[in-house]
Image (cartoon, rainbow, N blue to C red; front, top):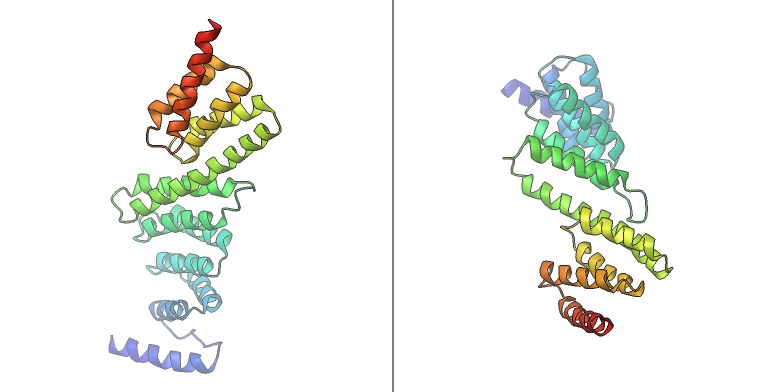
Length: 252
């Protein structure tokens, strides 16, 4: 142990003077420690080179899973999220008994989360992030990061709901009411646990009324009142429901 410590001190003194320290005489464990020190010092590109060399030179070694994990983390720290996702996936696929598996699964989801773009753009990465967070929850239900993963899923669901809700609003403003109703329904059914579900139902009520579908507007008003009694729009919908009922009673 003392010998290894002295070797590491020596190599880092040498490394401080040169960016290309010769690691050829080190044991695999010493080289791994050297690579991890590079990672800790945020010299991620040098760390990547070392971790890749370790993986190539010592296949089947006990250090491979740790090297693979830190290679993936180095990619992540460099904001190379696609490459990071690729490296985390390799660990998950090829080293399924590794102690790094839970963290690798969580970080795989994190990579896709970081790739998730502005709500107006294609949301394939957002959906992939949700899928990987859910896989983390399913496979590691007792992990301390489960709650964090659940919160991330809620955040991303909200993002997907906003995209569909915004499309519905655009169609409504353009007076393409059939299309707007289709998108409002999609938000209500698919993203019922987001903040956009009550907003979608609220707008749907008035679109139905605009199309003179008074019976359906009343039906959805009742649904809103029963489902969202604490919503800020509750009293407005309640008042509108009473207005719809009066109109229907007059027309009978």
